[in-house]
Image 1 (cartoon, helix red, strand yellow):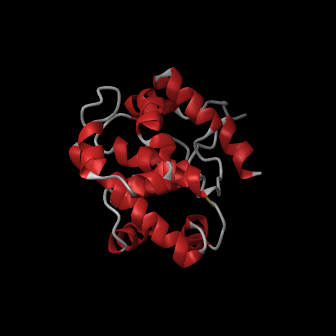
Image 2: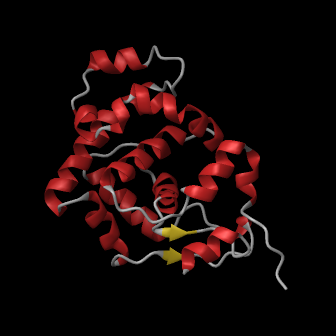
Length: 190
């Protein structure tokens, strides 16, 4: 009988445990949630996921509820004000990416009808299931993530390297990378 154990990374903090158990890898198709996850993955670059989750609500408030239209209209004055907020991740380039990525996101919505339609076309709407024994088996990126990253960059997105894109695909449930002994693995593969 296989020992039941969850993905080890989730035990690092209460925030990660809750995120792992309720959000990570759960397929979502709502553009507003997809955009939020894209922002969170951008903010995480080079930092711990625990830090991002601890500052998530402060970022939600500071970033106007992650509203795509509002973020697309951000000005240099608004960006400068955000850089003064000690409760969020204050990286000048990441803050500037909010507007750029919102504008590019809206352009994809206009072209494809929704960001979900655009991103899910890469897998014909299916979720990819990893069959990983341990977390060490899970890749940091894949050719699919590299392909999407390249296209997003061409479309004007920033902070969308292959590793960030792969993390995004995991977060939104396009890829199920829960290890096979994790209770979430079975729940999400049914």
